Image (cartoon, rainbow, N blue to C red; front, top):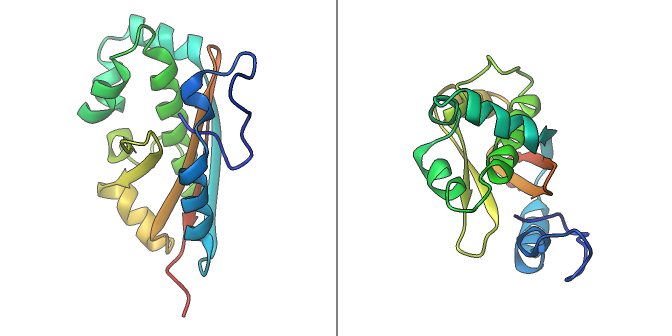
Length: 163
């Protein structure tokens, strides 16, 4: 996972190694803002224990909410609930940025992708993509972080390049 441009240093107590990735991804995100207007923002927190409980109680939850790619990434570690919670928070943050609730789009239409460097990105399809297009959003920036108990996502929808 990646935290924003102001991250905690390596070895900070309680911070997972993959939660402290900043560097090149943060610089690229800052450069993407040059000449673009931030049109929409959204943020969300998800409790890891709640996601863990839903995954245990409702086996179909993962397939209804997450894409095959997201499930493949989340199901690898010893405790997939942390990764699922971060992705769920991202989906809700996008819906908030678009000004719609959980019924505004099918959650699998909002996919969190992961670059080889570990930095996240978003791919929207279907109604979610149409809502973003209607809002003028051309590019999304996303940052995710999680601990054993909480996951946080922040998204910014950018307009077209100026000029």
